[in-house]
Image: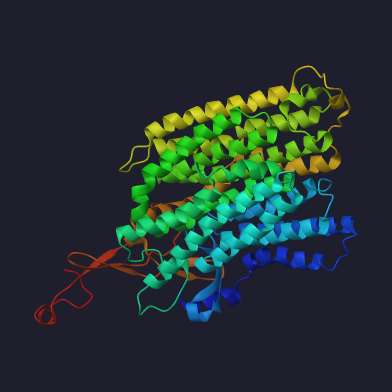
Length: 579
C-alpha cells in the first residue's frame, strides 16, 4: 500500500473501524471509575455502551461498497517503524458480517446474563468489553503482527470468564483451553517471524498481509508454515482431533461465555484459514485439501455421534458445534464460490443459532440449576412460549428450509459436490449428509425429552415462562434466523467478490499479487504486478473497479521479452512493446 495514498485515505475517511474496535475498551476503562456496589448502574452502562457500538457498526455496513472485492474503510498508521509494523485495518466481504455478528451479539449476551452473574459483576463486564475489542480488532487487522496482538488479547478475558465465573470444574477446563490455544498461537508466532525474515533484503520492512501474499517460498517452506498457522486455527475452530478442550469449556463457562465462544470466538479459527493460512501458502493448501476435507467430514459425523450420546443439554449443544463447524471447513476445502460462501454463511448461522441455544439453556438452568434431560419433561405445559422459542432455534440448527441453517448447508453441499480440482469431494458430501440426518435426530430427540411427555417432576410444575427481559433477548435472534433464511442475498452479494478474490489467490497466486490503493470509501484499483515467465516478464496491468458493465473484466497481460542489450538496437520495437 502506497504510504501517501494510505495516509490520505486515513485523513479523509471517517474512522468507522477504529471507532467500533476501541469504543468497547473505552467503555471498560469508564467502568473502572464506578464503585462496584452500584451493580445495576454498571450493567446499564455496559449494556448501553455495547448498544452504541452496535449502532455505529451499522455505519460500516451502510458505507460498504457492494461489488468491490478489496478491503474498504481502510486506515493505516505507523506503529513500530523499525520493524515495519503498522496499525492497518479494513474490511471486505469476508469479514464484514463477522464484525456485525460480534457487535450484534454483545448487547444480547450482556442483557441475557443480567441476573446470571452474581459475583464480581464489575470485573465481568470489564472482561466482556475488552473481549469485544479483541474480537473486532482481530477481524479487521490487515497487519499480521497487529492480528496476532488481538488474537492473543482474546485469550485473556476468555480465560477469566471461564476461570472466575465458570462451574465447579472451571479450573481444569480453563487450563486445558489456555494451554491448547497457547501452543498453537506460539507456533503461529514462530511462523510469522520466519515469514518476516524471508522478505527480500532490499524490501522495506513490513508486516502488512498484502506484502506477504505471493512471497517467494519453496514448497517445503510453505508446507511447514501452513502447518504452523493451520494448527493454531484448527485448535480454535476446533477441528477433530483438536476439539477436546471445547465441550469442557462450554460446559463450565457461564452462559455469556458459552454464547460468545460459540457465537464469535470459534469463527476466529475458520476466519484465520480464509484470511491468512490459505492465501499465504497456496501450494501447501493444494496438498492439504484432502486432509482438511477428510478431517472436516469426520468431524461432522463424529461430533454428531458424540452429541447423540449426551444427557446434558449444554454438552449436546457443545458437541453439535464440532459437527456444524465441520461444514464450514468442508465448504472452504471446496475452493468454489458456492462452497466458500456456504462456509461463510455457516459461520454466521452457527453464531446465531447455537448462541440462541446456549441462551435458552441458560434460561432453564437459572430456574432449575440442572441441565440433565432426565430432570425435565413436559416443560411445554408450564413454559409454552419458551418451548416455541426453543423449537424455532432447534429447527434452525438442523437446517430447516426457511431458516438460516438451510442456506449455508445447501451451498456447502453444492459447492463441494461440484468443485473442480485435483481432489474429488463428492464422497465427502455423501458422508457429510449423514451428519445432517444425525443432527436432526439428536436435536429433535433432545427437544422431545425436555419439552414433551408428562409433567411428573414437582420442581418443574412451578417454572415461570419467559419474562420481558428474556423476550427482548430472544426476539432479535429469532428475527435474524428468518431474515437470513428467507433473504440471504444481502449477505451473499457482498461476500461474493471477496470470495472470488480469495479463491483466485489460492488457485492462481502469482496472477493475483496486487497492492491495494485506497480512497475514503475503500479501494479503487490495484497496482500492476510482475511475474517471471519462461519467455520473459509478464506484467499484469491494473483492473479498474468498474461496476454494472456486464461480464467481469480480465487483466490484460503484456509479455516483455528478456533480450540481450545489443538486440534491442536491431529491432524496431520499443522497450515496452510485445513481440
